[in-house]
Length: 224
Image (cartoon, rainbow, N blue to C red; front, side):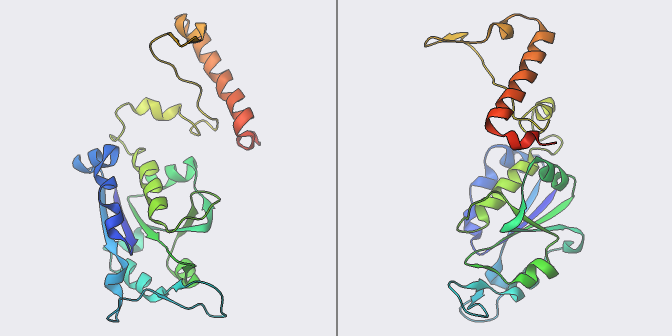
């Protein structure tokens, strides 16, 4: 997979993209990530990427022209999923991660300030995504969330692919509780069923626990 990230803070990504699963995926050649400086596509000596909003109001708005030029300079951008990270976007979830993981090329656009000129959303982006109902200082941390959620779904990235099939959200439910040795710790015991060796009973218990946990913590996931 090829992922291009456009940002005014390329240094933000120094470190995270080389660590843990992302670093391993890059080392294996499973993931090609490139970071682009939006300011390289400005024309004034101050490398200005923002301006006052039409109609007045607080804050500054990122200009459209640098975004068009930066993304259009990326090889193969026409066929890429061009994702604008914005609080106004569709909420990012596991299904969206799976859809993006099926794309060979993704471009992630990291906004800042009060927002980005709407013409970037309507004339350049193919998707608008929000990672949650809150506001961040910029799209950089949101883009890392998307990169990690998508990358771990690629073949060969996760050591045990079967683990992807039963984790939270993959089945529409939250994941069931997990335990490991020792069987007793500070007065807290591992449920007997997990020590029974009865695999059918264990599967039933895990399913029941996933449903109960989802009812308690995320009942919205059970709608429909």
